[in-house]
Image (cartoon, rainbow, N blue to C red; front, side):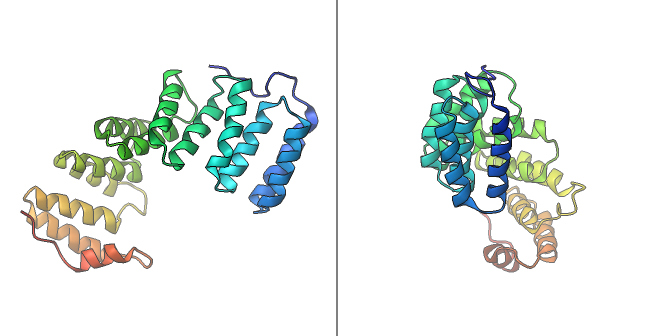
Length: 241
């Protein structure tokens, strides 16, 4: 994989300071100024791939405009084929535009090249696109890869549990939720996790465990929890076939 950071020409020392100033503008929510400055830098440094990449990131991340960012990522790849960061952000923009099949092709290309420093994010993003495409077994494998990068993460365990439930692997889904609830993270005792485990336990015939989860879930409710979750827990365990 090409790891060119600066493009085909030597890196101008002053450009580092220019990009730092742009980043300060972005983080201060001065998006219009940051974008205008990036366009000036693109005109001034037309052979520096980092400048094209930063313009794409400004549009996609701070501006919420993934469609407008795509051409800039593609310019990076025209100058530096295989540029890992541009490939990743291009695939991410495609996913955010609902072009999940193309996004998966991009994520696959990055994964095929070997080590990617954001492997956790790569697996998570590809898993989400695969789920949308209905490729559930492949998505489950990516959630598992993500957990290999961040073992015991309650959010990742919840996502994998939800997918395993869709695949009919209920006992494995319950095990994932149990691991998530056992996390040392103080937020692990989460009403949504208890609600979901209760439903799965009921489907498996463990009505005592299911009722206990609903009771614990009601006790774990916090201000700001989604109204549908509050209503579901307060409504009690639904009938199961």
